[in-house]
Length: 240
Image (tube, rainbow, N blue to C red):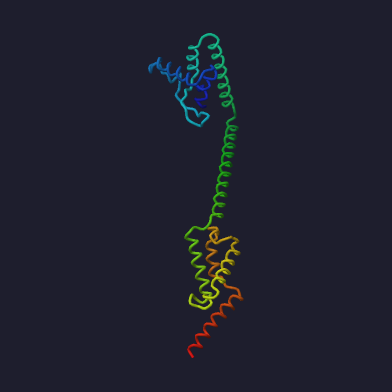
């Protein structure tokens, strides 16, 4: 049994008497000061807090039945009578609720508690799944960083230069731009991106593997070979 369920918050008292809550707080504090510590004011009024409409914690008091009776003595006439009726009815409601809880079968209470716990767990599990999906989506769509982009650029350049026969080759001097264009076209087509910097992080390892396995087309290989053979013949002819 929750002891707080037998008390009425000062915010509710303020509604009952039609006064601003701050005024009710002043009244209660004034009564506590008049009671003094020897009269155990906590048996009448219990300090507490509540959350206001701005989601902020604000001070309040919980009035016991004795506290309501004492507070009611400060009001006379119609207002005092109306307040007495309201708090008496409110305490009767709370008593009936407590009695109903106590009268319930313990097994039923245990089952209800287990059901509520299960619902809470299911809600938490759904939230965890949503978080995991969000993280996975972020990982999938996250692009490579600057260092990875630099590695792709460096390795791509090395592969193309090697395919041309080196920087000093005749093919490099004549058609390097054409071969570089072919390489990056193949690269972007494979990964379906407008530029290599758009590759997802999850495919970085695949991009390095693609570069290491890339080969120019047969037409390009024949053209490269022709240029390099041409330069070789010129060198051999000059040597004679």
